[in-house]
Image (tube, helix red, strand yellow):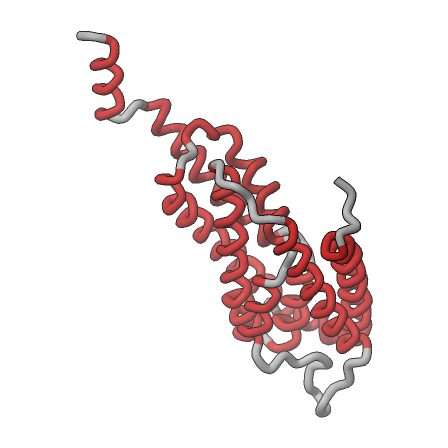
Amino acid sequence: MPLTHAGDDLLCRGHPRSFSMTQSLLFGAFLAALFYVLIPGPAFLQLLGIGAGQGRKAGALFMMGHLVGDIIWSSLALIAIVGAKTIGTFVFDLLGLACGFYLAWIGWSAVNAKPKADGQALVMVERPFRRGLTFGVTNPKGYPVALATFTALVAGSAGALDFEALPVLLAASFLGFVTADVILVGIIGAGAVRRFYRAHERLIVRTSGVLFMGFAVQALWHATPGLLGWRRA
């Protein structure tokens, strides 16, 4: 049998090495999505306040909204890894500017927060799903963090990457996101975590507010030069 026909026959039967590479690629996408969500950041601090202060349901709604942004940024990261052209820096600078002002507003609100009624949480988010959606979509670090995380964990199977594999990779990533969300909501809504949060709520909220304003300054610092054309080549 000619060599080319033999190769075609192996592909038709399913080469063990190729199958192993596909498994590795899917597992890498799953882990990348898992770590992307579990890495502490502004969204984690916001989830801590919402979940511990208002319960698991509010925390779950926040993470459901945030999941939209996770999917968007991971999709762009995977497309870039496969070989498509990345989005221009202007888009991310603009998002950085919006995110900076948004985080500054949240931080200022947290630092000056006062309970609306006795026994009520210091910070109450009336629409946690919308808050999570805004957080996820306007996070300017979502793309570079997703790109770095996915590159680190799927680079070993780069030979198996193509656009036809994107739907399956996104499905594996989605499973990773949901798994991480369940873990976080479970931890944040635990009785011990809620009791600790309530006992030190004022300090935690004030500290989180200061951190949010720090994140805001950082976002504005990186976004403004690009928008004004001051960024160095």
